[in-house]
Length: 97
Image (tube, rainbow, N blue to C red; front, side, top):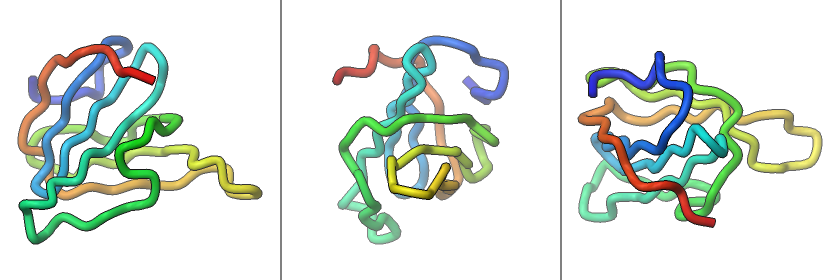
């Protein structure tokens, strides 16, 4: 798959240069799995937790992924999360709670 920009439902596994993401469009959630074997990977707030996905600004192979997420921080309506370049996008399993 080349892009998630036209996708409205389903679960996807997005691999970037520094981490993996599981995105559930049915429930509008995302989980980041840091790739600790990659020296470019860093740890981010709420890694390995389901986070509310508000929207996808870009998720296209070869470009950095940009997501609007809600970390449920008081008086912070959303956070913009940007990744390293997307390497591949695969249809995945449903996201688990």
